[in-house]
Image (cartoon, rainbow, N blue to C red):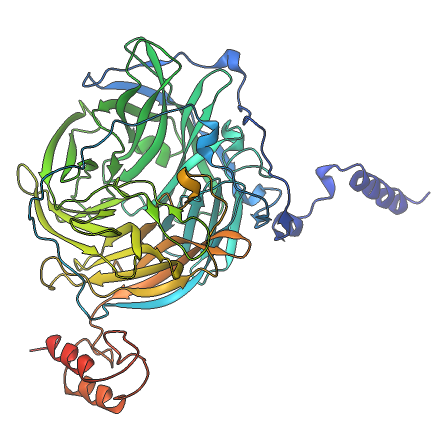
Length: 599
């Protein structure tokens, strides 16, 4: 037999036997878009580690001194994944991650508070936002809700959901998509030790380090495991090398063991910060809810692919979120809803040293509990509760949002707050709400602020005659306090979910949306939200700007040239000159243009 023939036969035999030797680089990058008809999960999810090798629980105390730990790095290269783009869509009924978690309950907040009459503004009837491009994000996985989060760098947009990660170029072309858990090929966190349950993921782009950072929690019931697993890219391109860390998070306090749930994730120049609720595992002598774990990660080690050093504090209260602090010299804050009319804001002094946490209560306009939003079909959306969704801080002003019923209202409103953290204690600077008629609810507000001080908000909205939609609004730094622009609809569902899974037949939605600023210009905003199509939930990513809507010719001022363009469009059905988005260019739009007139 000729040597060439022998080589060919050997090659074909290797392929038939299923060895990896016949996989080409082109095949490694192939995009898979078929239907995923069976959930790739074990019931209950399997651990990624031998129980006999698990560490002991970490002793921690509420209000106690800082405790420290270290975690070794595991390095992976996404270019070596057997399948880089797995966009298969699950066609079954999504499972709530909470169904695989122990029973747990947060302390109830007091929403039955006297009305405090603090000012809360309404939207003004002018559009400040200009939608740019939009594209589909990650589509339905075997898990529901998606919990979408977004990170934007120089050339890529990264998204996480339950339980997947993907990134795209800024035009929306998929570059990578894979499961976070061990059901991938391989899963993004599989090689660092993750098993079949990586839930509540979050991500951000650290503008100081110019890196992408991704987080997922893990819990496994077999031996009682809890992990905070995170990864950081080796540069500002998510393709290629990632440094990954699986940090142990089973806590022991007052004779009981606690696991972590519902994280916050943020950063500043000094460190990365993770917060999580601590719920009891089993029926020990300790309280069923311990407080909020605050884990401070010294990012100097992970940025170099070296050992991660981290420290823990435990704060009182539930559902703390961490603000993203993209500007130089700005320290982050943690924040939570403390009641129907109060926020609690925390600051960590010397985060890489003694890490001392101080907190203060801030009075804010009243909101009441509301966890249900109606839809045209099905029993409606389960929109959780008025917990804080996300936060960002710039120039010592903390921007954040939640949703709830305003006094005298019967609908949930997306509410936003700006808190002046330059005072001691912090004080409410301004607040506003989006309250709609026709029994339409708004929910999951996500906020961001750019380098000009302009703010943007993205949120969901639904009603008896409105399938879930995504809307955005904004305010310029010079706008009157408490005002945002009228919202602009940028994404719409084709139907509503009917799968239930929540109380009273409600379908779980959210649990959060996300919004951030493009670091290239520190002006443009990006957000991600959830929609419903005929095949299940999907996510959609939107880019938009905030500015002078009346600047029709884009020269930076509103003057006679813009008025001439408005007159030329007078009577048209919509278009750029329809400043109040009522579908007609008329005298109302002329009045709004005059209100934005440049001196």
